[in-house]
Length: 428
Figure 1 (cartoon, rainbow, N blue to C red):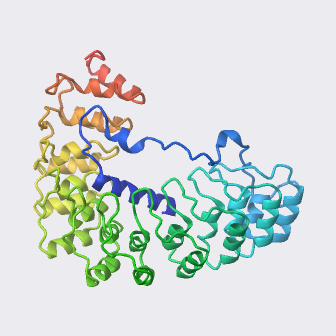
Figure 2 (figure 1 turned 45 degrees about the horizontal axis):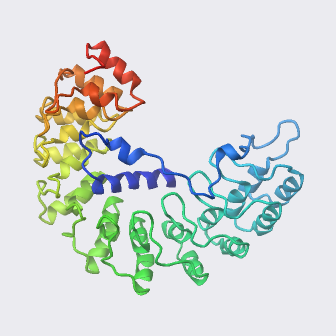
Figure 3 (figure 1 turned 90 degrees about the vertical axis):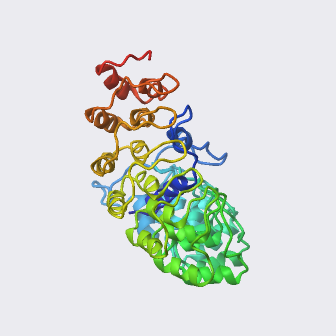
C-alpha cells in the first residue's frame, strides 16, 4: 500500500473516532467527510496547465528517454539535454506534479533542479494533493543538498499540503532523523501542527521504528501528553496505526492507556476501529470491557463495523461477547452503523448471523434503509437490505420513507430508480 493510501486510511480512522454522529439527518455522513476542500490560492490547477503526456519509457522512433523518465531515473546528462530542447517545461502530469517535483526526489540532481528553476518552473508549485517540490525532496534520504537548493531559491519552509503537512512532517513520516535535524537547522517550524492539530510527536508515534525520533522531540521539550484538536494523544495515534512497539514505549514513559478523546473514545475504541485484533486483546488484557462507551454511547463494535476491512475484527468482537443489538444514545445498533459504509455487506451479514435485528429502528424511528440510502455509493447495500426483507415503505417519526433521504443526494440516480422499481414513490 502506498503512502497516500496509508495516509487516507489513517485519516478515515481519525475521522471515525472523532466525528459527529453519522446518523440519519439532513447533513449526512457523506456531506461531512467527503466534501472537497477548496484549493489553496497557489495550487496548480489542472485546468490551467497542460498535462504531461503519458510517454513511454523510450520513444519507439528515436529510442530516446522522455524527460519524465530521465528525471525519475536520475539520468542527469540525458535530462539536461531534454530540458534544453523542451519548449513547454511547465507541463504537469495527471497528479499535478511538475518536472521539478520529480527532479527534487532524486539525490544528486541539484544541477537539474537549478536548470528547471532557471527555465521558469516555480519552486512553490503544488500538485493536486497540495505538495510542493520541497515535500517531494524531503522524502528522499541523504537529499539535503537539493532541499537546501530549494530553500535558497525561495521554497516556502512552512508550505502545507492539503492535510496541513509541512516538509518536517514528511521527514518524520519517512523516519529520517538526519533530515529532521537538517530542516530544523534551516529554521523550519518545529511547532507546526497539521489540520487536525497533530504535532511532531503525533507524527512520530504513527510510524514503526520511530522511537529515536520520538525521544529526539521529547528532548526538544515537547509535552508527551499533548493532544490534537479532538483530544487524541500520541498514544491514540500509535494505536490507530497498530504500532505496538510505540504503544509500549509510550506507556513506559508515562502515557496512560485510560486517556480518552474529547468525545470519550478510549484506546479500545481506537483499536477496534483500526482492525488490530492484537491491539484489542492488549486492552482487554488491561481490563477494558467491550461494553465501554464513548460520550455518544458507542461501544467498540459500533466503531469496528464502520471499517469495511474489519470483518475479522467484527467476528472477533462478537466471539468475545459483543452484543450486536446494543444501542448508542440515539438508539442506533451496530447494524445501523454498518449499513452506512459501502461494500460492507459481509460485516452486515456477520451481525445478522450473530443475532442483530435487520428491522431495528432508532429513537427517530429510522430503519437501516433510512441510513443506507444516504451514502451515494451504497446501491449494493440497499439491494442487500431489500433482499433481507426490510420494508421500503417504512416511515420514521418525521413521516419520511428512505426515498426522502435518497433524493437528497444528486448521485443517487440508480438507487432512486431501484427504489421506484420496488414500488416506492419519489414524492414520498
